[in-house]
Length: 137
Image 1 (cartoon, rainbow, N blue to C red):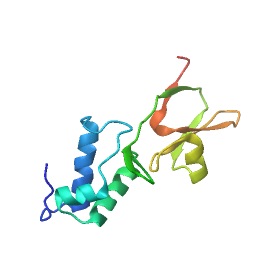
Image 2: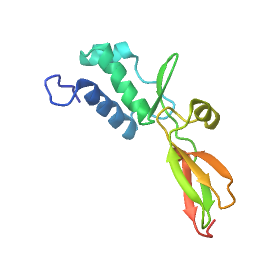
Image 3: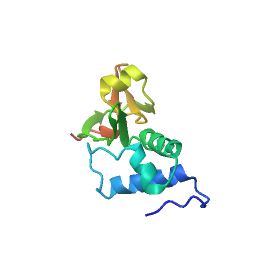
Image 4: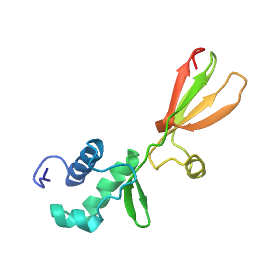
C-alpha cells in the first residue's frame, strides 16, 4: 500500500490507516516494535511530523504505546468479566495519569467506572473488561 500526497486524505491519516491495517492483519503483533520514524520517512517519502501525527492517532486509539526507545503494538491483555447487579451504574471516561499507570492502560484507552448500589466504585480498563448483567457467572 502506498501513500498518496495528492489525495484528499491527509498523509498522516493514510500512514495511520496503513499501520492500523498491518496490526489488524497480524503483520505487526502485540509487543512488536514498530519501525523507527526515520524508517517511515524513508519508506514513504513523508515528513517526520506526518509520522509523529500518525503515531499520535494510533496512541489515541490505544493501538500502540510509545516509550523512550520507540513505539510498539499494545498488548490488550486478558479480559476480565465482572458481574453487574441491578442498580449498578456503569460509566466510561478517560483516566487521569495516575489511574492510567495504576491500571496499566495505554494512552487513549478509557476506563469503566462501576458503582454498585452500595456506593462502592471500581475503576477497570475498558479494553479488558466484560460487564455481564444478571446472575450469570
